[in-house]
Structures are given as structure tokens and as C-alpha cells.
Amino acid sequence: MELQDKIAVVTGAGRGMGRAISLQLADAGANVAVADINAENVEETSVAVKALGRECLPIHADMGSVSDIDRMIGQAKDAFGRIDIIVNNAGITRYLYVMDVEEEDWDRIHRVNAKGVFFGMQRAAREMIAQGDGGRIVNIASIAGKGYSGTSNAAYAASKGAVLSMTMIAAHQLGQHDINVNAICPGSTLTEMAAETMQGRADTSGQSIAELEQLRDSRIPIGRPNTPEDIAAMARFLSGPGARNITGQAFNVDGGLVMH
Image (cartoon, rainbow, N blue to C red):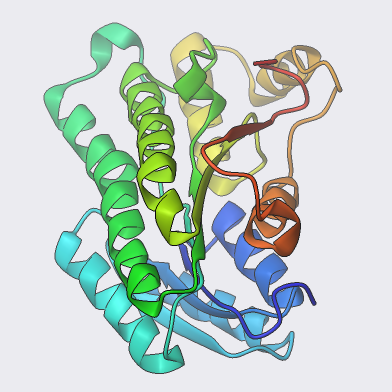
């Protein structure tokens, strides 16, 4: 129970990696505020966290809205009295060829993936600084942000590159407050969003889902994609005492797709 009685906030917690992360942190002893734009999904995550014997606060919030982010942090602070950990996981994408990305695609993706991560990080850090005893920030980026060519689209890759840059700058500037800031860069991960992206690839290429899955797995040195639990395990580690001297880093969890 390395996170016994710590207070964590997880965004995009309604499904996929966010739900898995919420459950891993709860399993480690944390009480969790779970936020998602889908109110039904986040309620389901809350039930699952409580089944592990931890307290949980479900929050319906749009992570592209700074006012919603402010409300989320305020509700978590009011409910639990403090914030020790935030995992900025919420993100969106869809499959697009580089020449098909429109302005509205760019704005929609960056609104959540870049702006949402930044202000989630900033608002949580504000509480951690006031508390005076440090904290942990974990941002979910992507190997797309490191230039992985198999990304869903260029706008998504750019948004995740922004997450990597923000992580490093925040780690440098928040270190004086004993706040660790790190990023996780997932590769191919078996989530609902990834399945939707895969369907977009199939519709565009004329290949079947089975063919695309076989091609995906053949490119991974270890031979298999991630499950959400693989990402959650890294988030749990970075939130715990074993990572106390790790900050400003971006960890690939991708089976070897990108080795830098």
C-alpha cells in the first residue's frame, strides 16, 4: 500500500487507461477523484474504485474547459482536503492523413490534449505548492510525441509533443517545491479509442481489422500491444515512493516500438 491515504486525481478516468490507472492507484492505497466527460462511465469507474475499499469522487468534467478543470480541482480539494497526485490522462484523436487535417481537428485535439494537460497540471500544482509537502504529476503523452510514424494523425502527434515539452519545463520549475513531473509515452494500447482509430485506418486503407492488427503486432519487438494495465503500472510507480528522485522524464511503454 505504497500510496496509503494519498489523494489522487485522474482525468479521462471513464474508460481505458484512465480507468486502469484509477484502479491501480486505489489498489496502492490512494483515495481517488475520477473525472471524465462521460458521466455514466465515470460513475462506473467510481463504483469499481470503491469496491477496492477506497474513497472515490466521480466528477463530470470537460478537460478542454479551464473552468471545468478549476471546478474539478476544487471539488477534489473540498472532498479530500488535499491533492497529492494528478494523472493527466484525458485525450482524444481520430485517424487522419496529414493532408486531411482541418483547423477544427487541430483545435479540438489540442484543446484537450495540450491545453487540458497544461491547466490540469498547473491547477493541481497550485494546491501542492500551498500544501508545502510536495506532490506527483504524471502526464500521459505518447510515442507519437517522439515522432512515431504510426501515429493516428499529425495534430495528435504535435499535441503529445507539447505534453513532453510542458513536462520537462514544469519539472524544472516545480522541483523547488518537491513536485515531481513525469510523462508516460504509451505505444499501441488496447483501448476503446485505439479501436476507433483502427476502424478509421481500415475504412481509409481498405484493409481488414484483422490484417491491421497483425501488421501492428508484427512491428512491436516484444510482439504484443499494451493493455491499459501496462500503462497503469507505470503511473502507479511514478506516483509512489520508489520514484521520489525521478522527474522531467518521459518513459516509453510500447514493447520496444520506439527506443529513445
